Amino acid sequence: MPQDALCLVTGATGYIGGRLAPRLAAAGFRVRCLARHANRLRDVPWASDVEIVEGDVSRPESLTAAFDGVDVAYYLIHSLGRRGFEEMDRVAARNFADAATRAGVKRIVYLGGPDPTGDVHSAHLRSRAEVGRILLDSGVPTAVLRAPVIIGSGSASFEMLRYLTERLPVMVTPRWVTNRIQPIAVRDVLRRLIEAASLPPEVNRGFDIAGPDVLTYAEMMQRYAAVAGLPRRRLFPVRLLTPWLSAHWVGLITPVPNAIARPLVESLIHDAVAHENDISEFSRWEPTPFDEAVRLALAKLRDVQVETRWTGAAGRDAAAEPLPTDPAWAGGSVYTDVRKQPVGAPSDALWRVIEGIGGENGWYSFPLAWSARGWLDTLSGGVGLRRGRRDPHRLYVGEALDFWRVEEIVPGRMLRLRAEMRLPGRAWLEMYADPGPDGTSTYRQRAVFLPHGLAGHAYWAAVFPFHAIVFGGMARNIARSSRPS
Image (cartoon, rainbow, N blue to C red; front, side):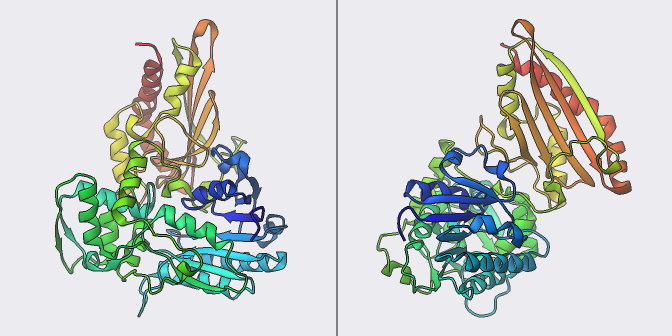
């Protein structure tokens, strides 16, 4: 494939796609990113190096322009954690394959999951395998790369491993911790994906890609502990922990919510070991050992250089819709809580506090109430507060922030967050830094709630008495933290 070939990258707001796109551009390829909402990629550092088009693989009519002139199409989409994800994946893959065929694409590259032998009890792995078959049958030469557990800063699998190992020096574990896994470093996954663009045109098949070490999950935890400088962990496998119970256990201990933890856990009940290494015939290099992959990931976390996180991809449901511009949206009720606070400091000082909110910095009011809300969300299967933030100082549109998602940023002026906790309605939180005279500013804050049914109205009535403490305290403390000490 010529170096100036045009590559279409789907899933560019996700963990792998967000790393692949800039690397393809750096390798000399022309890159076009497909996103349902183009503004989700507006603030990424490499936005000016790629073309961004709007489209949705669930809507075939939106794909024609995206595929125009494309040589290589990367399929990095999956519906992990969503209800009915198998059918969603099936339809999306067929739409993608049809669009690639019509456009005369020369190669499709798909990143799937491991292909275990025997009966496959994981719906997640079955769906990944079915998507691979659909793309291989498209008539377009396709490379299906089957990767097991990916080790890299910000990956869901790595976060699960990290939190379980660091937080539980002694633990009762499910039987799947004795299954064999061949983890792969994220840098090696990206390298394989880039090289797959240049495979010979007659290649239309799947390839196992993996690292050099075959380990059990228990061994991965012990090796992680050694690299991280932690004491050896004491593990006691038992038969009682089913995948369902294991997912809830993982959801309570780690930032990975149940909806994502369950398919990850289900995929671990099978051995995930490469059955062949045929990909090496086209490019010979030594993959990264497990310990080195862990060291690299921890260094990225320590130096706050995490490019993408598993939290990057947003859901497909109605909660992903932006804040309605009309306060009387669809004739429904809209509840608001508005606060204003003078700040004896310039607006840029106030903005630094606003953009640094969440994660380790907290929410500037009644920490116990925020923690309790986070735990309630976690117990109900939501994301809770544990996702934190990717960077302690900078936010991008589309990234996760605890149980919010950044919906809009006007640098130095406004931050809008959309709630992703479980609610009987849709909610947003807006924070403004308004410049004032003589080096002062004003902090404005607006909470918006659109209730769904009677439960939504009852929810607002129940929490309204606490707003003076939570939202009022938040406004006062943000204003106070912005002033020079």
